[in-house]
Length: 90
Image 1: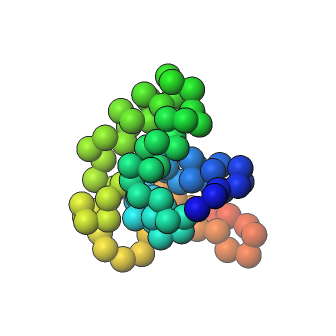
Image 2: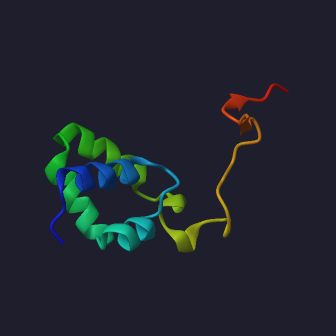
């Protein structure tokens, strides 16, 4: 698949996100984990790539099968609820 710069930017963004698994990138962009690593190596500065690899390596949330939760999205208990374009006060 030939990726546009916009798609490459989105893959990089998803790869940096802690809770976005590689399977989501595979589903959306048809890139395997190794292909994402190759893309990141090519697109990032060497120091940024090393930082990303250190951050991602061994992170259970980057692999669907290693996650501790199955459904929905993780939401911090301290996260404010947004309703009708206004943030609710506690």
